[in-house]
Amino acid sequence: MIESIASVYERLGNTRCNFECCDTTFRIQAAGVRADAAVTAARETVESLEAQLNAFDAASAVSQLNREGEVKNEHVARIVRRGLEYNDRTDGVFDIHQGRVEQDLKAFLRGDSEIPATSFDTGTVRVSGSRVTTDVELDLNGLAKGYIVDRTAETLTGLGRRGFVSGGGDMSPPTGPVAIESPYGDDTPLKVLDTDWYVATSGGYRRSRNGADHVYDPTTESLGSRHESVTVVARRDCMEADALATTLAALPLAKARELASEWEDLEAVIIHDGIFHTTDGFETHVLDA
Image (cartoon, rainbow, N blue to C red; front, side, top):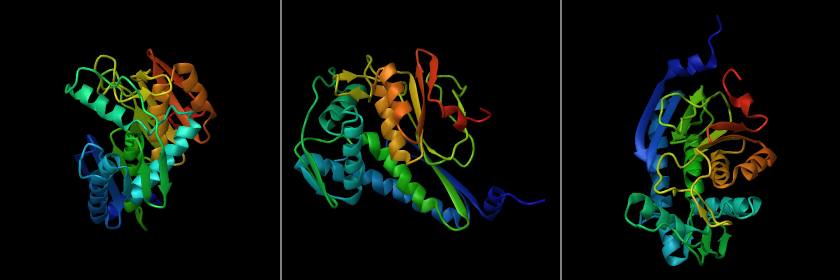
C-alpha cells in the first residue's frame, strides 16, 4: 500500500495551537518536518504583525500613521497599496479612508458611545516604498487579518511540511474539509468546503448593535451588513478573500451577486433572508458538491 503524502507528514510531526489575537481565535497547525518549531514561529509572526497593525493600540504603526499622518513600515505599505487597489476596483465601496468611522463604530459596538458613525471622510493617501503618508485616518481592518493569515502561512511552508492558519473566518488554503459557520446560532454548518483556495467569511452576526456592525458602505453612507453571512473563496490570497467578503456584505444583494460573478478567480455564497445565493463555480469548492 502506498502511504499518502498527508500520512507521511502526520507521521513526521503534527502540532497545533489555538490562541486569542486580533479580537478573534487563531488556529495554527503544521504537519511534517520540524512542525513544532514552525508553529512556534507562526504564532510569533501573528503576534508581531498584530502589534504593528492594531489600530486600537497606540503603540502600533497604524496608530502612528493615523496620529501623525506618516509612518515607514513595509507591512502597512503593502496593505495600503492593496486597499487603494480595491477602492478603485469596487468604485469606492471598499474604502480604507474611513479610520474615524471604524473607531466610532467600534466604540458604539462596545457600548462606549450611544451614536454610531454619522458621516464619512475623504482624503489623500500616498505610498512610496515602505513609507505611507495620509491626511485622513485609515481603516485597514478589512485587509489586516487576511494579510496576517497570508504572512503566517508562509512561515509554515517548508520542505516536507505543510500547514494551515485560521484567524476567525479568514483561512489559508485548508488541508482538509472546513465548515462555514452558521449565522443563526446553531451547530449545523452552512456548507463544508473542500478547496485549495483562500477563504474569508463576513457578516454582522458575530457582533452588532441596533442594526450596526463592523460593515459599512461609504458610497451610500449606510451602516451594517446587508446579509446574514458572506463567504468568499479566492485564488489570489487571503487578503483578497477578506476584502471581497467585506465588500459583498456591504452591498445590496443584486450588486453583490454581480460583483462576485464578475471578479476573476473568486467564488462566493451570500446568505440573504435565509436563501443561499452562490456564484456559478462556488459548488466546485464544496465537499460532495
